[in-house]
Length: 341
Ligand code: 2RA
Image (cartoon, rainbow, N blue to C red; front, top):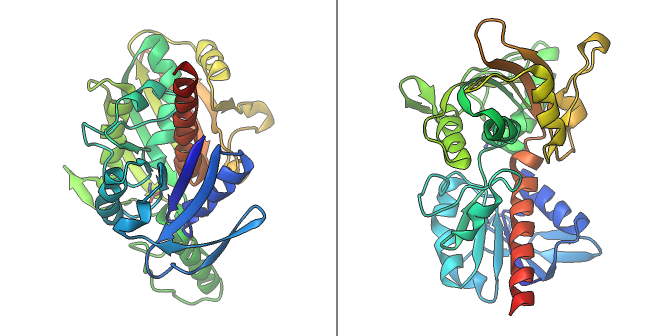
C-alpha cells in the first residue's frame, strides 16, 4: 500500500486512462494527488466519487509522495523526475527521456519484471510501438532466440496526443468538404493519407521513433545482438497501433509452436482465422489491455522466419496500462517486503 501517489500529466490523453485504471484496478494507495503544468493547475478532475484539483508541478509538490506515475513530454520529465527522487519517491515514467539511461530499468511487467529491482528512483515504460512488439517477441525469444526483426508500423494519431486526434478529425471533415486543412501536429495532411515519418531524422535515414524500436527492444530483452529494421508510419486511425512483423529466429519455429507460445503468454491474445476473415484490427482492440496477434504464417522467403500482424491500444498497453502494471509490481514487492520484516 502506498501512502501517497502523484499522477503527473493527469489531463493528457494517457493521464486520463492512468486515472481510470488506478480506480478500476483498485490500486493500493491511501491518497492520490494530481500534478500538472500551470496551464492545467486548478482544473477539477473526477476520480471515482471524489473530485480532485490538479496542483502545480513544482519541486515542493512531491513532499510526502512515495510513488509517481508520469506521462509528460521528455523535457518536463527531465526536470521534475529528480525533484521527486530527491523527495524520496519512486517515479514510473512514460516519457522517452530516461529510457536508455543505463541506471534506469526499462520494464514491461510480462517480459522483464525483475528489472524493477535495480532502480535509482526512476523506472521507465517503453515507447508504445516497442512495447506491443516486445510483448509478442518475448515468448519467441525465450523459446528459440530472436536473431532479426523487420517491422513496419501503422501508428494511430493518438500517439501524438490529444492534438493528433483533433487533427485527424478536423482534417478528415475538411477533406470531405473539399477543403484543405493545413497540418499542425503532423508533417503532412493525415486525412486519407499515410505519413512514413514519425519523429525526427535520427540515424542513417531512420527516424527517432524507429531507433527507439531498435534500442529499446535490445534493452528490454537483454540482448544487444538482436537486429531490428523498422519503418514507422502514421495512419489515419485514432486509436490502436498495428505492426507487420517478420521475426527471424535462431532455431526453427513452426507456426503451430508459435501459436502455442502466444496462447500461453501473459498479455497476448491470438486472433487468427484467415478463412473466416478473423484477425486483429485497431477498432476491435481500442479500450483493451492485451497485445493481439494474428495472420501468423511461416516466412516463405527464408528459413527460420515467422511473419505476423500485431495490434494493441497504444494509449493502454502502449502507455497507461504498462505504467500502472509497473506500479502494481512495485506495490506487490513492497507488500512482500513489509510482510517479511
Ligand atoms: C507515436 N510512439 O505514436 C509515439 C508516441 N510515443 O507518435
